[in-house]
Image (cartoon, rainbow, N blue to C red; front, side):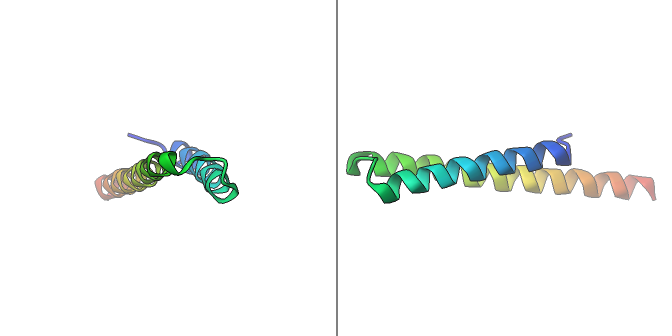
Length: 68
C-alpha cells in the first residue's frame, strides 16, 4: 500500500505546483486561452491528492483493524 511518507511528499509537491500555477495566473504570465488548461491541471492535482489521502487512510484503517 501507499506509505504515509509518500502521500505527504506528494502533497507538498502538489501544493508547490498549485502555488506556482496560481502565481502564473495572477501575474498574467498565462494567456487567457491557457487558463482553462491550467484550471484542469490544478483540478486533477487536487483530486489526485484527495484520492491518495483516502487510499492511505483506508490502508491504515485496514492495518489497525487486522491487528486487533
